[in-house]
Image 1 (spheres, one colour):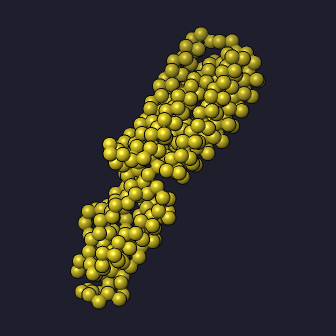
Image 2 (image 1 turned 120 degrees about the vertical axis):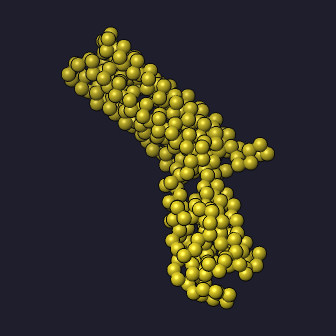
Image 3 (image 1 turned 120 degrees about the horizontal axis):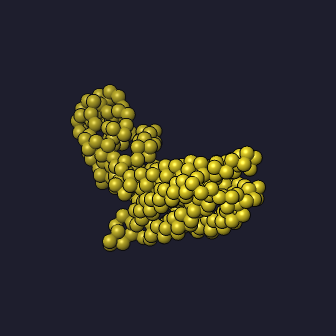
Length: 327
């Protein structure tokens, strides 16, 4: 819950900054009459709208579980990211329309030097806030915060492109470059919007996170104990800031209930030491079988039926299958 509160508070900061940057961009557009700056300002409107949507989704995801939502409300973040990605893509299409219209009916540009200075300032602020948002989002496993941060970062890169283009226009007086810059900018944000939508759909559909799976499996390989004879049927689902992990753990069949429970507790603590307290684990216990002996490293086992041969390395492929491993 602490992570959810941190995400919610940081999203408030993003909203305040988004409004401030929008005002700066509108001032820059007013004094320059540049369509490239106008499109940057239009994109900032999306920043503000999606920041409020992200704030509401983080509020929902921070709510405790209830009878109607036994896994919590974390899925709201995926919906928020999907809406944000859609709005970004639509804005890109609007920008394309405005840029083409400006090519047909060029505008007279005003004080580009002042406009360049204002837009450059917004890009610096955007990057710093976006970088901080992505960092905190990854730390707290918040897709909504990561989406907001990546949006701001992409806004930074495209704004830098606009600044460079405006400098060229300032020195060359090639007014048509204003529309060309806007078109390039539109394509960049459409691609960004698509990527955000793709991530949100993957989360809603519980698509496997290959990178996270690889990381978890490698960590478990390095942390396994002699009583963890086998691990299989591993599944991972992310709900907002909460990571749900299910698996089957094979332990020596002669352990008492208390001893077997201690092994489960050790596994849970091991994972939480890596990924924080916002982890929920459901571990099914299996007793070992005679075919488990060649994989078992327990030297003091008094009921061993076969000698130890080698330890099987856990991989995403074999640890995800619902079968006990054997040589």
